[in-house]
Length: 542
View 1 (cartoon, rainbow, N blue to C red):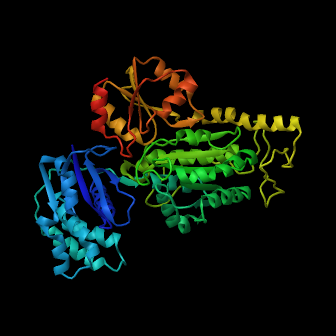
View 2 (cartoon, rainbow, N blue to C red):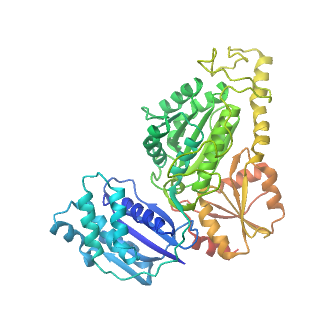
View 3 (cartoon, rainbow, N blue to C red):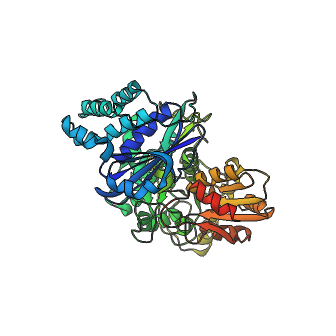
């Protein structure tokens, strides 16, 4: 069973905070929750909304039909009422008079959304004491705490009806978004420095990591621009600090010169690249998967790199750990490819064995692959890394010999190029211990959906409902798991590619690496994400 709740209003009316408060509280009550955010690039005004999906089993995407609509402004009613189920409930200010309640009781207008929280949570069967305890815990020491408590009390007094809820579970659950998952993965990997210039949708990771730096003893910096970020990161890593940077597509454009230097200087570096629609400024606050070619190909010259694409919060933790491990061990560029949908959607998951206790501490000893020291020697034919402070260290964007001295000798140049490219073969061997693909749905089906990244949630829920399809999820885009992908696709009678792009970029990569052409594609490129129902409808036509 699933209950879908839309919360809508203008930017500046606290929609996101309301959704996060309600979502976290429902998770604590024992429900599985997914929270989707949709907002324009405005500080105030416009239209923003969140969709909270509540279920008795794992839920990976929101629906487009709603059991409850909470309309903090009239525009939300106009836009979304057509999607309210026949037995659904509409809560709007014209009925509940939340603004009047705030004014009449001389409360700060910023707590109006808490009135709606009280109304909604009573409707969902949450006891008042639970709400009061949550407010006291969440807003302890805040100047508006008393106003928040009064606003929730007034809201709870309003009976707007009841909603039949799913069954609760006693299993402890976690509620995080992909930005936090990347942050947890970086902390668990022993990150020393994180550098980023704010750019939606990568900013969430910057904020999360900045909030935790005193707890876990690392440094977060916000340099003057993306060029400064990339070059400062190379300097940081050069002196032995395990370094990660974050940006979106437009910022990565500016970083590509430094990324090319990384390829020559062989300074370990991990990049969190959160995609958004382009080219140019595009749709700054919406989602797409169109930067795949850029992640795999950008920067001039031939250089090894790793590109991974998590599809959910847990994979964001795991693949960040793997990306940092590979960057450090092989002194390469590792890119974690995400997008707005994954970065900003909160999702419930249960504690995974040998993962980390997110609410208490990050246990680097228990989790993930052991990270190699920066200066560890290897047997793959490339040199030991010199780290400033331990020995004389030279890093150069010019071709150089094993000691870091510039050279233009043809034999030395070829030797160095061969050494760099050999890394990819070593990486391919090393990553066999990790999941490079995953199969979801009916494992022995000959009808295959191919996808990667944040489309995972909608595809998993769709194939679960259809039951006669399986989903081939590709986690490693570089090095590409060609043999595994080819094995799954060669025995398929029907293959459908699902991607949020206008061309189906993963199909280009599959054709290049396996020779298999995928002609059937379900594509979306308006900045909005796939839902389960859309994919079920499309796949039923195939």
